[in-house]
Amino acid sequence: MSDRGHAAVEFALAAGVMLLPVALAVLAFGPWSEKRVMTEAAAAEAARSAVIALDLEMGRDIVAEIALNHGVPESEVRLGWCDAEPAPLDAALAGCTFARGAQVRAVVSVWTPLIATPWGPVGGVWVTGEHVEPIDLYRSLE
Image (cartoon, rainbow, N blue to C red; front, side, top):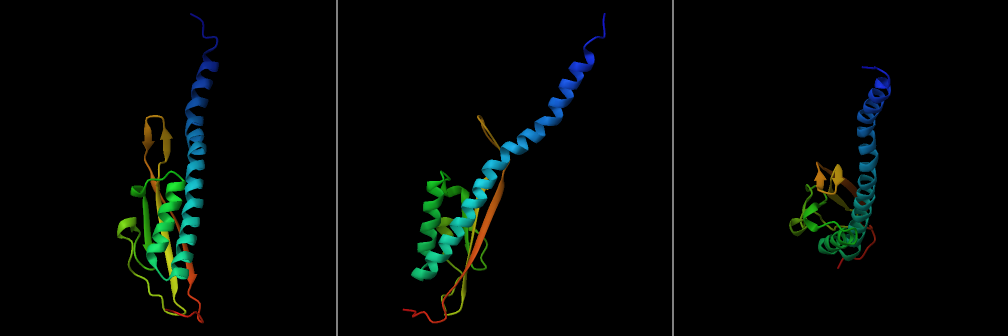
């Protein structure tokens, strides 16, 4: 029995085992980054539209529309206003005042799988973005 070639086989196996986690981390970064940008944009648009319309429901509708455009189901999206913790979209309509000089803070969280496989997602984290929009001191409040 010859020992020739064992080093090459062992090297290939060791390199594969060590590179697999790195490859999975690189593959997981794309969706995480996309969801991060989406949550920040959704929070900014929600806060801005709520301040302009003086209505939190308008901001919630914007978040739902952005999630739908990105293929994210509403069950995986959370929205929190001002100091409230992010909650499902149908329950997120409390916590802000629209007085002159006040600030409206929108926090949007989206569930993101750590690894997406053909058999379904593995693990996951909540990716969060937030934005604060001031209400103009000289705005006419109706």
